[in-house]
Image 1 (cartoon, rainbow over the protein chains, first blue to last red):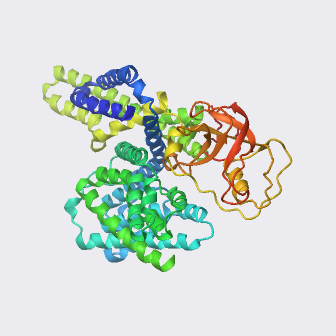
Image 2 (cartoon, chains in turn yellow, purple; image 1 turned 90 degrees about the vertical axis):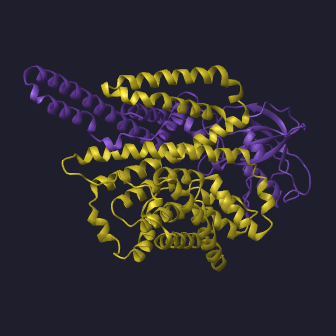
Image 3 (cartoon, rainbow over the protein chains, first blue to last red; image 1 turned 45 degrees about the horizontal axis):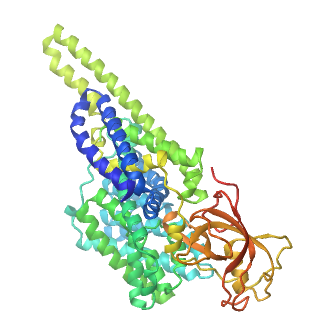
Length: 345
Length: 271
């Protein structure tokens, strides 16, 4: 689909070709540069000669715009998140977390969930931070509670929700409580059923090693996380753009009639649209055909599970984790929003 | 992905972001104006990160060369010292930060947005999206002030729709108004839509506001135009039965304004 796919294909080819060059690069950086330039030039030639005609079709243009928009919007937050995770790894001593969090994991989970309030970013920032927390000895259950709650209940997102739903503070409160509840339940669920082997070992987060410069540790960790997560972000943005362009919004009207279907449908929509958590309140507000309960489900599920987030988690924690975790989170988030929305809205 | 390529990718991403946010307004095709300073900071940070990586690569390389040379010298003088000296030099050159240097292949995907921003930035969303997406709901307004006496009266599409469908005083009746937006064709009909695409965060959450235009031939889809005209009568003005439609007097081509993703009066054209 479009130039992105073309370039993605090219990137795949380049990787395959560049792999042997890694060995060659032991002599110096020049072969890497050369390979890269050749591939870039060849790729451009192909795009310009073959692709220009159908690249300009309206649907392809819209797909590229949406894909790039999701990426550009998320990059600053991803950079913030990976900088934080690099800093946690290099500068924060391990004992700080063991002091800040309760000793018993059952209690650490809700505390970590509440701590999500302080990270003013969207969901892209929280994945690398949670990963580095696990690396620094925080129990995974607490790190996951933080991962889920941070993008949903930080002040920026709650303010956006209040602006998007003027005159209904109950919606802001319902979002806060339902998101916190989901985060805590998922943390406890991990304590109960979770297995370490689903997690890819976070071996890189070894903390500060004596004899090495903290700054260079910070820089290298930051850089690695950013490039790694950035790649998965682009992958997720491509998937989200495909759904965005391929599924016309008029499909929505079919589901808005039934109260139960509409909750499930909007939860599913939140997953495939991958709207940033700082913006999803405005999108929810625009879905006027749907009940407030369904819109709450959209806002609770959205920051916790969506295509780009699944891609990011799969890259960070491993695929077997991402699939289980996202499925369970969706179910728990829908239940929490129905329960809490039923009481408050 | 080896380290020089990582440095190159970071520099490329940084320049891409700076290109669309600092040197041009291209980023406004994708995100809200409020993001522009954030993107500039991000671009600068990526450049710094890339430059630091490139610098450390060059230094590691130079050290490696020196170490090689020393090892070669050592070979002629004291053969015993060779293996140790060489291994030591090598460790310093490439063992440094080894656990971080293996960035997985997925990072190559970052070249796509980076190059796209630099050389092949896709256009802003237009009539294709407007003809498929949901129409943004015009919110209720209870009190309406008297309209200014200016003629033609500049208005947004939302203001016009509110005046037509909600203002019981019918102040819009007989007034000449001026609105701007892009052209969206309605297949098989003479009339067309004047459209504004509205985003709340980035282009992924676009919604559209439309006013149907009668009595003027449509320009090609996605052309930005400024239209003056009067309300196209139908139904009862001031109630939902009145259509948000306009009988066009003049249609003038304009450049896309910087605030093209909001339903507001046009500011300066974007760079």
